[in-house]
Length: 321
Ligand code: ADP
Ligand code: MG
Image 1: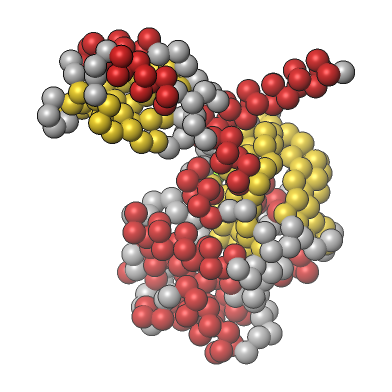
Image 2: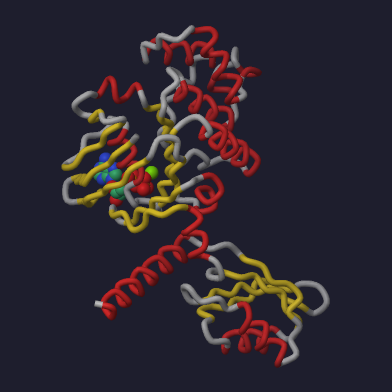
């Protein structure tokens, strides 16, 4: 459905994208994940025809975005990082304006009503956009992307600046839309792509560093990352016991908890499951481990484990050659 091939983008001396290639299949929800400044927005802006590339191409359903901009753009609905809202319009005026702008041929009233139903903005249809909450504004941004019923929808950091409740609502909406659209979700938030996407493409410093089914990346992250442990005993002694466990990279005191216990944040080395040795070491010294849960892997953890697993692959390939 979407093919990005050898995209390179330079802004003066800055190489924002360096030979980026990936594909998105029909019906997939793909997460485009990377830290700030990685090149996500640049890629999405090129793919949607807002920006030209220095080298390489982007095609939608076989149509090159530069050679056939009008047809290709018709197939894409885009929610940019800064949604292009006109604050002095009502929601109704704005969506009608977008309808005209996109030269939409669908039944106007019915189509706009359907969109309002899906993104749940019926109750603010007559209101000025200026007066709406950030969560509603984001929904209206999504509504404009849906006008014309494009096959592909692209979201660039759709949950930035929203409160936790709004974040859940927007993620659910993206999941719903993913049922009958091809979706690219560009974000720097790891749990966001894990919870929503079939496949994850990771970009760092303008280069693609991974392109995997979500389940594969999740398994890569199993047993790694950061743990929160609640342990009874004198803080300094407990910390030094934790630090002696092989595979522990960092141990930090978080705070006092009930019954003489404290909470600690413990990070293992990439790819090492430290839970069993940690438990064994603590029980040997009679420090009761009364709580242990994953603190969630960070994006850095994933990078590290991806890089180290790729190194291992290379080494085992070399040794088998
Ligand atoms: P992301 O969306 O992943 O945070 P961007 O695609 O916005 O990253 O930016 C990638 C790199 O390109 C960054 O180093 C950024 O500073 C640079 N960049 C983006 N847009 C411009 C621009 N218009 N002019 C100069 N540099 C830019
Ligand atoms: Mg961005």
